[in-house]
Image (cartoon, rainbow, N blue to C red; front, side, top):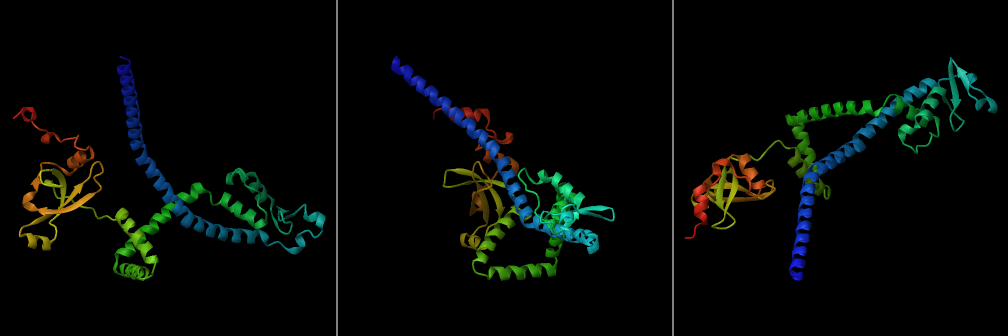
Length: 312
């Protein structure tokens, strides 16, 4: 009796652990797709921000700083204090108060310095104060004219517009010729050609508008005779195979469960494929569910199921 109870307790604990593991894996399967999608999108945005947005933003900020700084820097020499004691206090010119920068060698408007000092926290909790007049101007322009809430939407609009026109240019004769010439030059360069070729395959797969067109759903004996599997007809295969066999052939994608995006491409005789009364979506649901979700028109009749259980 004790052994029986012990065995029952062990079986119960195993059942609990198995159920807990299944629930955890089911939850992980539900969380991972959106989580990985978010990670990929964040990575894509970080790449665009680091290599496109940030350099453009730096160039624009530099141009604004040059213009603004020159405007405020055109101060006559006789208007600036010459004594050391007065230089530390600053001066007023045409109604604008100027104060020395941290180096003590240049001046900048007091309102600019005060504006930057008051908003240092916008750049991070441990951001140090700028160390020169030029650094103050860069921070001021970034705070005043290049706030991210305005820069990012404008950048996205311009970036999308540029991509649109590049796409249009590539589709016309001259643009296609330039792109093909560039690719030939890249593919002729050692080492770089390997990297470019791999990256191009990924981008072509991700962004190409071409899709695999499934003509119909069929059942064939695969992977061996006596085992029937569902497949998607993608075409009439190659003429050389049809000539060798003496009859029409079909190219069929055999999807794998539960991920129908992967599978095997096989070529079979047209006479060996059985057309099924299934839509593409119904067949995909059948594959994803590992055969659990059967379309209503394909559910076996009650008498057929009962007859299959009767002894011969």
